[in-house]
Image: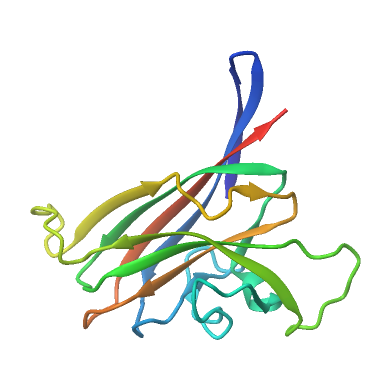
Amino acid sequence: MGTWEKVVTEGNQVTKGHVQWYYYFSNLATINTRYAERWNDDFGIANSVNGQITSTNDTSAAHWPIVRASRIMPYDATITRFQVNLEASGSNGDVDIELWKASKLTKGTNYTSSQAITIDHLATLTYDYDANYGSSIMGNSRAWYEDTTSFNDTSVTAGDYLFVCVKRTNGTDGSSYHIHSTVCYDITH
C-alpha cells in the first residue's frame, strides 16, 4: 500500500510518498528467525526470507522469497524516514524491525527461483520488551513507537524492492505481535 502527495518547498516541487506493511497477529515463534509479509497475504508473515538472510551484512539472496516479501518502488526516490508502531499482545521478547532494499529485476528476463538478487540492509529499529513503557489500557499488551532518519543508503531506483523483516531476539513467547511499519520518501522534480 502506498500513497503520495506533492509539496512545494522553497520553489522546489517535492512529491512525498510512503509505503506501508502491517503484520497482524504475527507469531515470531523462533528466536533469531527473520519473518516478512508475503505480497499475496495482506496480513500474514512467513519465514521464507530467513534462509536467505543470515546477517545485516548480507548482500545477495535468492530473488523469489525476497520479491514475494517486498513492495516495488514506483519512482526514483530518497528515503527520509522509517517508522514503526508495535503492539506486543501477551507476547514477550525484544524485536528487531529491519528495513531492506533489493535491486530491481531486469525487464523481460525469466528468473529461476534461486537466482540471486542484490540486497542491502538500510536500517534497524529495536523494540525492548523490558523497557518501562508504563501501564497499558490493553491489559498485558504493550504499545511502542520509534522512527529513524538514519540509513545505510537512502537512494531507491524505480523498480527496486523494499521489504521489512522482523526478528524476535529473546523471550519465551512470540505469539502475538502487531507491527505497522512505514517508509517515507521524497521524489524531487
